[in-house]
Image (cartoon, rainbow, N blue to C red):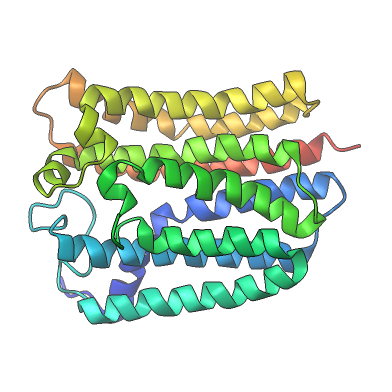
Length: 302
């Protein structure tokens, strides 16, 4: 099947993963609105900036994994455009740089609104976009990608979104960011669980490679357990509305995903390509979770 250039660029952005960038912004905006601090300009800019940083990370991943030998013809996951020859390495690199420039320009506006704390978050997020797979010490090649995702697609994105609207930090948004970070990390866990064998052969030392399949299965369930504990803790200790339990709708698409993740140790020799649907299912779970937190906290607002 012929893939058009437009379709190739869409594939390069990895649309299924973009909930990791949008969901924490939705959650942070929900908490800001519940406190009477909603500001449309910063909220929209935070969403656009988050999506652009996620896309830049995906393009960088596509580009650097190709040159480091992690993406080969034996790849089990969705198509990588550089490895498949759908886009030239130079085109993908240019796309990454243009996306980062666009994110930087949006960041200039957000810094004007929120000052130096936003500048710090923005610059570190851009550094993470490249440093995840590129640079002298690529995080994903040393088992640190999970930590980066938890911080930048959880804590920083959720609490930062609240901050640019309220110009103050919120303990509630930080706690919500813990849940968002844990759920977003679960997406990466599925990806690394699927690619454990091919990543290991390429010298990519993810946590799945370092500690094996059983660790990845436990890690996936721990991520979902932490996300589940957040609204329960918020209700019990921070006065959140019981409606925030709507966030647990994020479990619904993850039920079949969890079964696929566990099947790798339950059924030795199972084709790891069966984990590809689990990636999309977990990403949908992140979307439901973030929306549930936002809607739930708003429904409980007097």
